Image (cartoon, rainbow, N blue to C red; front, side, top):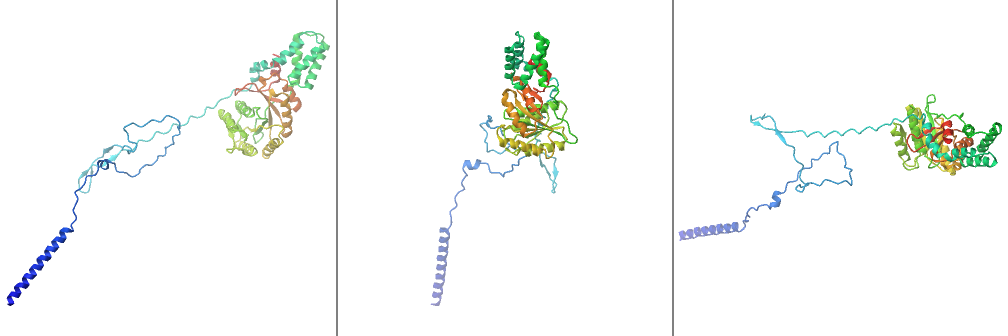
Length: 436
C-alpha cells in the first residue's frame, strides 16, 4: 500500500513538471517578435549626396560685383548649381615608412594657384598748360569780331564826311551803347573835337589814329595789372574770387590755376562754394587736370568760412606759392549773403592777409554788372576785375566803365570756353582789337 502511494506521488510530480514545461514553452512562443526582412532604401535617398561641412573662406582679394544691369552668363544646362566645387587633383608623394615597416603612399595636395594681382590703376594724366603770355594777341581775332559795332561803327561815322554836331552826337550814342559810360564818353568826344579843331581837317587814317590814342588813355595802360601769386615772406599769397551767380567764378578759378601752373607756381585751391551742387567736384576736377590739390568739405552746406580757413592753413603748411579761394555766387541785393561773404573774408584774415580779391563780372551784363560791382566792393576790398565772355559782347566799353567806377584794373579777361582761354588783360591789344 505504501508503495502504491509512492508511485502516485512520483507520477503526480512528473505530470506537474510536464504541464509546467508545456506552459513555459507556449508562453515563450507566443511573446516572440517577428523579425521583418531588411528593406532596400529608395533609389532617390540612395543616390542623394551627403551634406558636407561648410569650408568656404573668402580670400583677401574678394570683391563685390557691381555690374548691375549687365548681361550675366548663364550656367551650363547640365550643371547642378548645388554641386560642390571641384576638388583639386592630388599627386602621390614619395613612399613613407610607417612604424610597422610598410611603405604607405601619402597623397600630397598641390597648392592652389595664386590669384593674379590686380593691375595698378593708371596714374591720372597731368596736363602742362601753355604759357599765358601772348594769349591776348592770339585771341585778338575773337575780340575784334565781337566789337565791330563799336570800333567799325566809330570809324565809319568819323570818316563819313564833315564832322558837324550831328556826327559827334552819333559818336556819343555809339560809345554810350558800348557801355563806355557818360563821363568817359564825354571826355573822349571832347578830346577828339579839340584835335580836329587844332589840326584842321583830317584824313580817315588820322582820325583812326587819334581815336586809338584816346581809347588807350581811357583804358589806362599805367594801371598795375599783376596778379599776387608769389609767396609773401614765409606765407603763400591768398587770392579770393567773388561774384554773382552764373558769371563763371569756379571756371575762372580753374583757368587761373592753369595760368599759374604754366608759370611754375605751386597752387592750392579752396572750395568755399559749399552751397552750389557739385561746385567742389567741379573745382577739384579743374585742379586734378594740372596736378593741383583742392581743400574741400565732404559735408553739403558746410561753413564756407571754415573751408577757406583750412585751405589757407594747409597752404601755409605745404609751403605753396598761392592759395586761391572759390566762394559761392550770391545776389548782390541779398544783404544776408553779402554779410556772409564779409565773414569769409574776416575769418581768412585771422591767419593771413588777403593779397588779391578778384571780382568776376559777365561782360554781357553791361550796366547791371556795374551795380553788382559796386555792392561787392563795399562788402570786400576788390583789387581787380575778371571780365568773362568779353568775346561775346559788343559792349567793350565796360572795361573803361568798371575801372573808372571801382578804381581798380581789369586784370584778366575770358575770351572763349576753352581751358586756356583766360588771358591777362593787355590794354593795347584790347584797343587794337576793338578798332581792327
